[in-house]
Length: 65
Image (tube, rainbow, N blue to C red; front, side, top):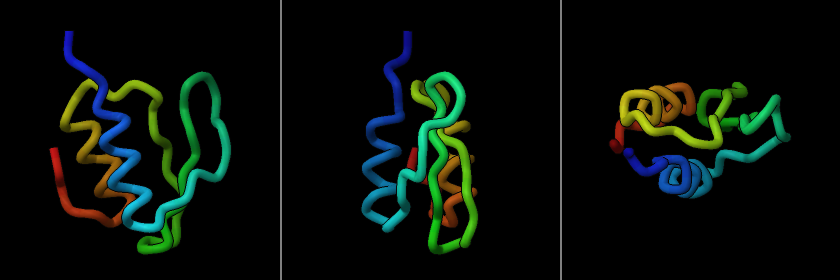
């Protein structure tokens, strides 16, 4: 079983000044990106590097996984 990429993803988001706005449904969180001026969802346990990179794209950041 793959380990969760969420902790590393959240670290990158925080370094890019993205903000955790609130808890979403279940283990999802709603984040805000000042780069893209939009909100996006971060799952509590992302196993796929494709999903992790998709979240970074929504935040306006380059791929990292």
